[in-house]
Amino acid sequence: DGGITQSPKYLFRKEGQNVTLSCEQNLNHDAMYWYRQDPGQGLRLIYYSQIVNDFQKGDIAEGYSVSREKKESFPLTVTSAQKNPTAFYLCASSGGRGIQFFGPGTRLTVL
Amino acid sequence: AQKVTQAQTEISVVEKEDVTLDCVYETRDTTYYLFWYKQPPSGELVFLIRRNSFDEQNEISGRYSWNFQKSTSSFNFTITASQVVDSAVYFCALRISGGYNKLIFGAGTRLAVHP
Image (cartoon, rainbow over all chains, first blue to last red; front, side):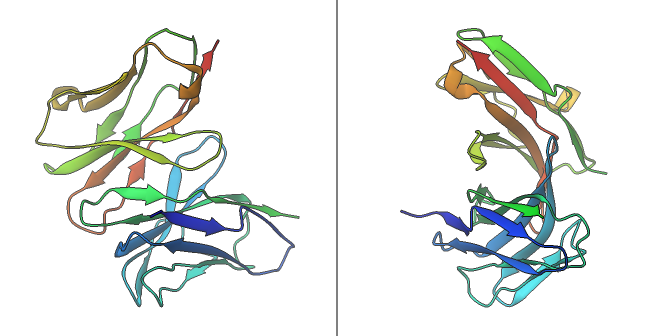
């Protein structure tokens, strides 16, 4: 089945730790995105990548980093510099029609 | 500036009622796209519809229908004969042409359908 997978589903981080969220897609999409969702709010764009080996900051990139070494993969690292990382993280990808399809999300909690 | 407003934070209806979710957008671009996504309790956003700014025809898909009116900058979503499975958070989003397909989301409307 074509789709987007994210892992883990739940992640717990201690203060000062870096953690990496995985996002993989087999839809052959060029563009991939990371969003953050806080309770009762819409999605905010963290980073996006339109092509392999290229990515751009979104609206709230501070404290996050990404890489795009393969077309299928777009991991997100939440660094210790992110002061309030507890949130729901969603990965998306889009192809030629520009419609973004989303993964199931990762819920990150800081202990 | 681009903005999407979903003024209804929560809506509660009884099964079989019709319900309309409002979406008002702001953009100075003449070419843009509007989207609706559904987020069930599982969390994954499910794509429902995309409309471009040049196509004001209303669309119907089963119990779902969408009313796009450029004159009022609105793209409202109606569920006819609601069902418990329709309970979710619904997001309206705007994308301007060009750039990197950035979506600007509204805050979402939580719909609760009770038996």
